[in-house]
Image 1 (cartoon, each protein chain N blue to C red):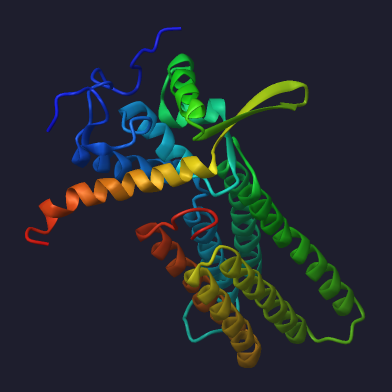
Image 2 (cartoon, rainbow over the protein chains, first blue to last red):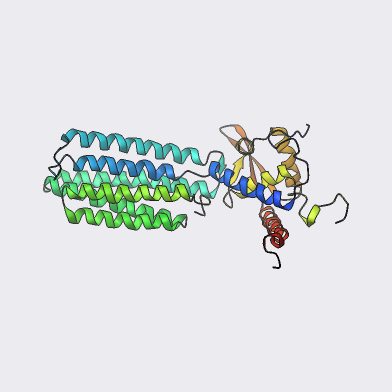
Length: 221
Length: 109
């Protein structure tokens, strides 16, 4: 087996100076982290867009101060499609991110990833069952969904922030709790505007923060 | 400056070679306790299998790298990870580099 130089340049065996060595470490570290770590921007970006455009569209199906009003079906279709896209993007991104890596960080990532569908599965069951009793008005049902869903989103971001020691993720969790509470306080249809601007805006802002300054590693964000 | 072919500047000769430094940096980027498959590491570094195994063997001989073999659905998989001493050696190496470079950045310091 010959030790060839493929991929490391023709003068791979030439001794490195201290400066070259340091430059190589910094360059490789950036590149390897970018390729090895889950790209968190691909979690927050699609979800932020789905909240902003989906709930924004739903808000515009209600009579507002604006001259035009969207047909009711448009809001529902836009929301369902964008949420489906965000769900698939997150799942694919989560699975692909740690390709070829095994160990504690993958276990943590996978357990945390599964807590989203588990939490939302249980939440959907509880809310559907409560609403099925028929005691709630359509407006009250709408507020139950926006308040409970944002509460769960907020708590999951708090947990993620604690797990990866990420102040940005923890702050987003707090912001989502505030958004959820506010959506219930303002009532229908204002709750959709709060979800769109507060929820969607918060997630898009977090996406921008992480795009500008990527977290250092999956376990040390 | 002596003319011997020993480690230049007093740096760890196992790490202070372009290919092995790249391997070490990649493995150090993994979270503590994590391991990576040989093909994925090869893809990350864009090295040939032969070249990568040669350098991994040198790092393994120094006790810096641990290579384990496992089976996944009957297919053998080779995992590579930096050992505790390997992580420390890399930390010492970067610390030594900083010391060497410091006088240039901070004249008189």
